[in-house]
Length: 78
View 1 (cartoon, rainbow, N blue to C red):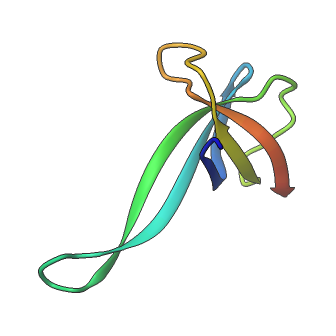
View 2: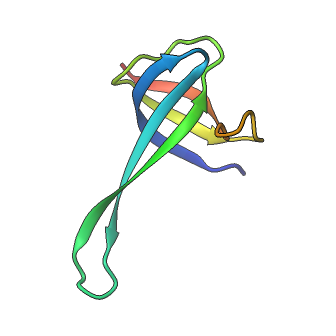
View 3: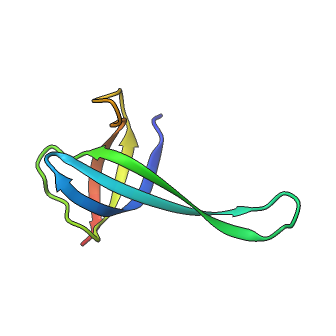
């Protein structure tokens, strides 16, 4: 089973590549306060179907380029 993540497209300036950001809440081990942790993923979008602001489901895959290790599974909302 490959990892799947839900995220939001923040950049569509490249051809066949999207930058997706994923946010999750993490509890600080000492202070017990929750904070947002954001991670950027470079995602392969073969048909250029996503735009900025779309919520997408992405899946881990083999390395496609220097930075791309994820591929688009489906668009959840536009």
